[in-house]
Image (tube, rainbow, N blue to C red):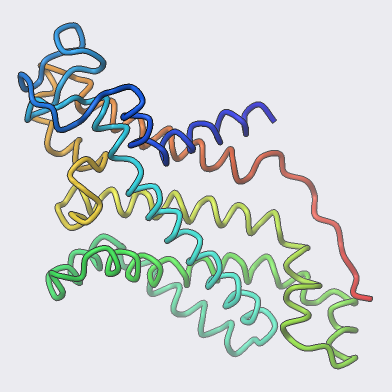
Length: 263
């Protein structure tokens, strides 16, 4: 419980970073000496343009994390529906597995770079669409693997035999029994989206995430790491800490799923 509270507080701080920066009266736009260390220029020093690293880290995480949550949530929803339908309908399941196999072989960042070249003005909608399209088949395959044992259970077959609708079977008989797997898929899809978007921003594709996106800060400040290491270490640590917090907040303490027979 304490771990989840701490993780939730950290995620809340990231999402409310711009507000927190205002409360502490620190602005990333204020210019000073580039790469001044913390002893010379306040909390965490300054970055390559002389702006506050601490303020930039607080401000830069919101867009990146919110976008990752959107991508991870959409991927999980689409992957769950496709995965369960694939388990209930073997022909569709075979197609989903084939698409997932092909998708896994193609790095998501390569597709982001390709689509960014073809559609340079796509912006944030393009990043979200490509990330969801790439992640959904893999999520569907994981969900399908968890659904097969449940789909073959007696109460599911009885529900099918009694004429229950597919929607009813999905939401009443299957999802409650794979909820632990779905939470894990959701957290992993958010983390995967977080790193894909961060990589895109690092490579200059994700400009719509903002100039203070953590990965963009790592790229821009790498040349001054010897002068002010915090200009690189702080955003990198924030990215890693966010990944850990997402897993701790969503998964928590896992419990063994129990069969919920249909009435």
